[in-house]
Length: 259
Image 1 (tube, helix red, strand yellow):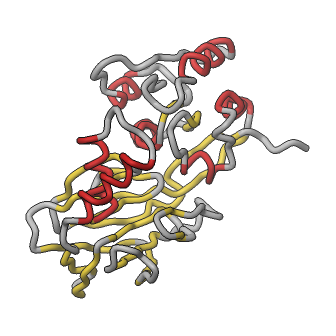
Image 2 (tube, one colour):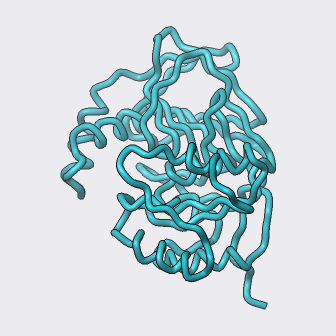
């Protein structure tokens, strides 16, 4: 399944190359449900070409069906593909995974919804929502800055985390450990650590973080709904919710390393 609306317009080229390699390939159209297509596919492996949100949707079905999963980075940031060791500047090379090796990696879940990278609550989730709502046709620094200004007007969230009270503008649960930089998520050295990491920052500029790690965490709130983003895709959550790590749940195909 290939999302032609992702990234720089490389989807048709990737789809053609995949077909040449004997892969049944479908370019998504309109409002097609990528998960329904993945569930119905007669397949020995499931692949996705697109941004992190598209990859997570297909990876979720691969776990349901106990099939190997492979991905082609076609998005804007491609966090997951980078952490797998793929080259986002050469998406066609990701198809070498078809003759590659299989490994098992972790996924995160908030209740029943999967995330490959992170689940964000608060400021970053608001930024994603503002970007989607107001800047579908605008890109670049000005659009991002305006979206940040709109999102920053929201007050810090009051949450309970495993029964303890916290206040944070940015709350992020990550699938394995992230190095954090100002305004940016760092890369992960591992995808099979088997740990969920939780990061909380109260200030608009997150210079310091409170951090936790473990296999699961319960989050509650007095709010009826929480603004959230799963791998950069906007969503709403209803507290209380359980966030957990599913260690080794995803069978992923990657290109073999040169001998």
